[in-house]
Length: 338
Image 1 (spheres, rainbow, N blue to C red):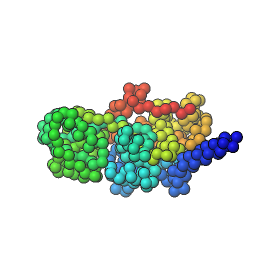
Image 2: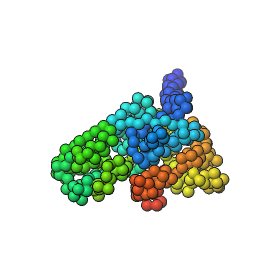
Image 3: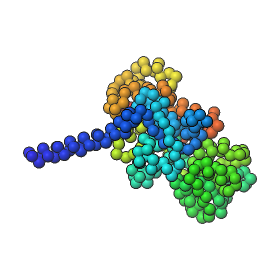
Image 4: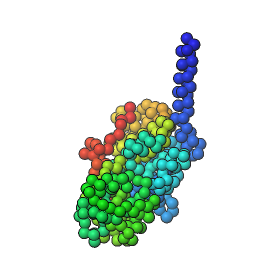
């Protein structure tokens, strides 16, 4: 009997310790009064600051969604611009609570860096941009090219794989900061600029003559981009994951920032659970039950964010493509709230 008592006491200690750890980030965020979010150093459409320091973009909206879920106020978030090289250290050290910086979900990052990806907020693929004057119409015509990219990213590895697989040589010219890559390419130091195709669309506008450049048709990798948190804090992971899921579920259910108040009175059980008029889904993870209502009311659903920041009526002109909802022919899918 004593052995059983000791075992139960030990188990209770483990559960207590785990729960204490699980609440750590949420408690710190609440005490601080804002979410600290790591973003890019300036990628239009995803995370970019204007001259007054106001951040906007698809990745920024994810951070604002988490702030709305935790505080009921999407403005209670501050942003830390980080280079590709700095981003994981900043998250691991506790400098930031979330990394929402066009970061690719890979096995190495997921299993060896002490990080957890909370989902995918943009399905992308790596592309190559060249000056039209080069006359190239395919990546297979780039043997011996000088290629500009960011150091510390999957793009270095992908471009190396692509050239090796096609028995071509190349010279990699890598920089830590994205703007350094753009400047080097714009100055003619490279024949090719390679990064995610969304990144090419975003950075193209920074070139001296954007229309003098073309993105080649090849997509050489899968780049599932999404928010990242530290391992060992399941509750915070859940809050970030379900903040993203709420925006996707909202689009699927036809709820947006304009009709969310009206939809709150709807009898649809899925809407009731999403908008917090039925169940205790928020309280179970340490936030209010109207967490998703606050996200949708203040930030919007996924489709609203997409069209506002990167859609076809923005300078990036990115079609939804595979980022459409699953019911519309895409692969965007969120687990249900129940």
